[in-house]
Amino acid sequence: MSDSTATGEQVVRHDFDVPNVFTQAQLGWEAWLEPLPIDELTERHYDGLVDKGRANSPYFRLLVRDPDILGARTRTDNDIFYNEKGGLPRAQRELSAAAASRTNGCLFCASVHSRFASQKSKRPDDVQRLLDAGTSAPQSDPQWRATIDASVALTKTPGEFGAEHVRQLREAGLDDLAIADVIHGAAFFNWANRLMLSLGEPTPPATPAG
Amino acid sequence: MSTDVIDRLVGIDEGDPVFALRVQRPDAKRNAQASYDALFASDALEHVGRPERLAIAYWAVALAQSVVAPHYRDLLAAESPQTLAALDAALPGAVTTGPYGDYPDGPLSVENQQGLHWQAPPELVAAVGVRLAAALEHTHLLTYRPRDASADALQALLDAGWDTTGIVTLSQLVSFLNFQLRVVAGLTVLKGELR
Image (tube, rainbow over all chains, first blue to last red; front, side, top):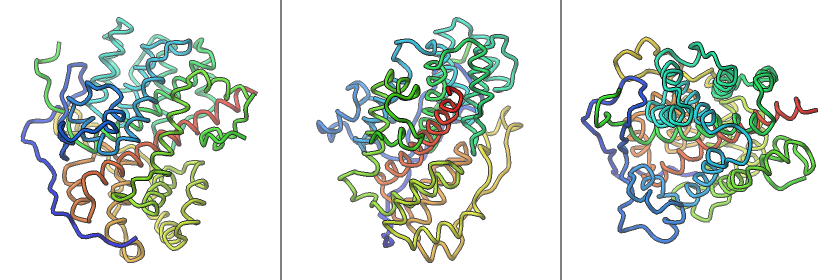
């Protein structure tokens, strides 16, 4: 493990005002490092992007610099969140993502997945309470309460997830596959949050929230 | 025993109830393994070498006090026992609890939480070099206080000899491990509750 000399590369600095509240509004995201130019994308890169349309996103064109891990990650993500064969309702998968993001402090991820949770559940006020007052804010639905509590416990470092969380999820009516989905949803956002937070920053919403 | 690393780390055999649960999300199972392979059996090592990958991986899971730490410890011990010894010596001064950190100035500032801003001690830098030491500091940042991540933190990596592609791989490594260790932690608890 020898020391290398610095390459002289510089980060990309932005001068917009970053968002400073959790919101369900549509934020953008800009990278601090140079995404791969579109005209340099090869077949291996497109395989890593999985969905060709992601070539338009600076986030995915930065991550595609390591195409193999990006491709595997995207396919993991899709199965955890979009495989609707049983298990946790979609709204609560998004809720697990939002709760992990609220705990880690990822305003961008929280905006995307709180919006999805609202769309799928038709309960935007319950979602907004999580954003405004935090993960311990009251939730009257026992499944939402249990999903949030488990996701937060799993997100802490070191983890605090224990048998009591499994029992709480089960008593709220979730089956074993649904409980596994909560675990995977929260765990996956501990991956996503760290990428979004560390490689760039959110841009303000195009139009004001609400 | 399965060759799937998460199955192995949780202690899941074919036929176990948790095995049957994972099979119902086949792409997630297959691609969690493919992610591990992409990071630790990659044929593209010019930006981040294998000893660096294993040192960063062990550091990330040791900081998180995860049950998967022995797995990465063994891999690193086989690759670079000197690096492992240096990391173990530095670990007690680096372990804390998270997540903590600051929000952009505004209404969320009341939620700012103070905590350790760890810097590699001189003995560790001497043992592993400036480049890896900078990655270990970044790993600490991403493990405990990801919301403190910044352009300056990436510039520090560039200045220490990392290039853009290497930083992407470094970020994926630490972030993936924060996923994997939580899947293992969660499924281990769930397995105990199914019996």
